[in-house]
Length: 352
Ligand code: NDP
Image (cartoon, rainbow, N blue to C red; front, side):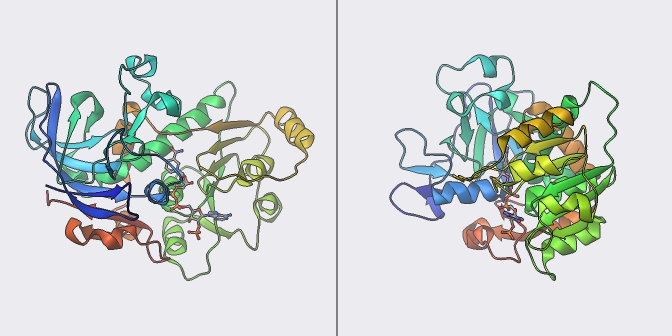
């Protein structure tokens, strides 16, 4: 069968011919429908994040997938069920995080991540997975179900943020999403019905991501004109900040911009960024204004189930505008483009 992967000795994604996997006991064989591409895939391709499976010369890419059960094998699934796989898998010997069903809380050294770090991903005509890592979703998610994984990332981060404010009466009225990539835009779509939502980017109009923000009814903030530190004065101080830029300064300015009792959720993966800051003022502001900061990575089965429900409720016009590229696996190159017209891309392997 064909797969899209990266090899140790060459750069860039390529079409690989590899054996079709055989499901082991407790595993189902899944016929892949679509697999999304995100910022993390580009980091894997750049070699700045993740790594190859031990003693293998290639890594099959892809961690945002939707497929159909082809062979249920001895699992509880039926042939034809639409499923979405979770990403993390236990390293040899397993560990307490996986035993507790909290793989998403494992530190990086205590987990493998399919398509990212140490385990093959889902960007292939078929893949196998233990049943416990497959989430059953409605058939109508066959088309956009690959977005369940990124939505689940925000389900977890927003859950952690809300839980950090659960000790008092917290009714967020304003959110600031930093980053107008696919994760930022999906999060705006999740928040905008509930609260006034601003989204910071660094693009000139006209731009497809800004058009999507207009369509959603969110306010676009051009960070080159209005940096995060100016947002409370120019607009209003947000109760919730969701950082999806990977720009390290936002971990500081996002917290400073918060309204009293607010919370900032940090999602981005920045590179090294050294600078001089007044840590005393930062520390005192956190304390005196009862602010919170949460870091959040990955997501668990509970978040995937919530995400499938959220995705099912999102407007079809928004999803059509968000997914700008759908490439057949034999002509996959356009799914890895990084031009300004691409928001979210996916590779298609089979029709439902
Ligand atoms: P993208 O690269 O698609 O989006 C990042 C967006 O942030 C881009 O639109 C970029 O704008 C914008 N941006 C970057 N720097 C700035 C800045 N200084 N000011 C304003 N806008 C800025 O990535 P994703 O949406 O896929 O993911 C967002 C981040 O979240 C990434 O860092 C990714 O690694 C991380 N991530 C974390 C996960 C987790 O579990 N914690 C899971 C998935 C992703 P432009 O395009 O114009 O350059």
